[in-house]
Amino acid sequence: MNGRAGYDFFDVAADVGVKAWGPSLPEAFAQAGLGVFALIVEPASVQARESREVRAQAETVEALLVNWLNECLYVHDIEGFVAHRIEFPVFGERRVHALLWGEPLDPARHRVGTVVKAATFHQLQIAQSADGWEIRVILDV
Image 1 (cartoon, helix red, strand yellow):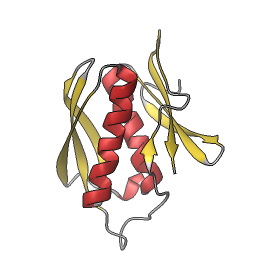
Image 2 (cartoon, helix red, strand yellow; image 1 turned 45 degrees about the vertical axis):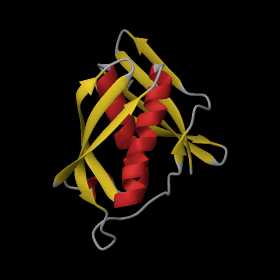
Image 3 (cartoon, rainbow, N blue to C red; image 1 turned 120 degrees about the vertical axis):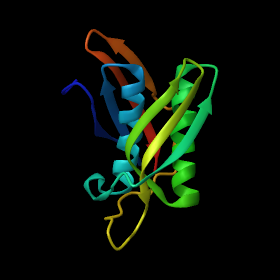
Image 4 (cartoon, one colour; image 1 turned 30 degrees about the horizontal axis):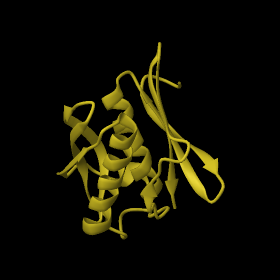
């Protein structure tokens, strides 16, 4: 893992993958979310002007990640909202409550990137190591 927390991308046939890491599972989730939004819009152009709540629940941590990322994409699809920072006031094994800090997408100010349709379970990995947590998730684009 490069640094304490972050994300990077990897190529997958016809899709794109996000590799995210952090010292804790909530931080790794947040980095995965930021990685998804970084595909949608240039991150440096987004400001944390307002927030949106995103909640998800599931029976497994893998399903929780996919459900939560897809809820983030729903907020983007419906409101055009893009995130600059992500916080988790509530983070449990089966439910999360996140605050996405960012702003509505403005094509005049934001450089728009890839259209992300959904997070998938295909080759999904969530693993803990001595350095923290690492997530690999493939996105349907």
